[in-house]
Amino acid sequence: MQYWLFKSEPSTWGWDDQVAKGDAGEEWDGVRNYQARNFMRDMARGDRGFFYHSQKEKAVVGIVEVCAPAHPDSTTDDDRWACVDIKAVRPFERPVTLEQIKADERLGEMVLVKNSRLSVQPVSKDEWLTVCALGRTNP
DNA sequence: GCCAACGTTGGC
DNA sequence: GCCAACGTTGGC
Image (cartoon, rainbow, N blue to C red; front, top):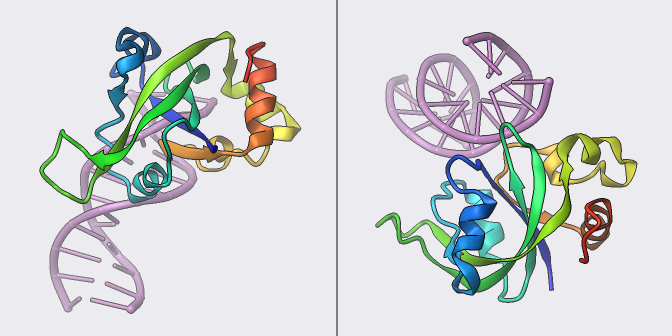
């Protein structure tokens, strides 16, 4: 079981949209970046991820689960692009802001801090547990 | 709204 | 295969 982070602008696709899809989940489509795509190819059903709101909010707001492994992205005919399906598991009791993450020395190596533009990224188990604790939320 | 960082494209 | 130019992202 591995841990990940999915980033989205809430105005395009936010946590509430994800929750509305229920257990059926939804494609994490539209990714056109090779690094992000490669991480999705590495994902397995049952992996967990953080759902992060970029732009105005800049906070981890919930936990999602990978419910389908990588498959072709239905929003393009270009077969280079793949995506997984994810479903909402639970919201964070308290969203964990980028500011909090940057302020925590245990999270200094997070990709979110080191490479802020990558939209799909791996999270270590320690980072996972630390962020969940900051969010007062069960991992 | 600006700008730095990064990824991609295309000419050579 | 290199690198300059360009476009996009996301934090500030």
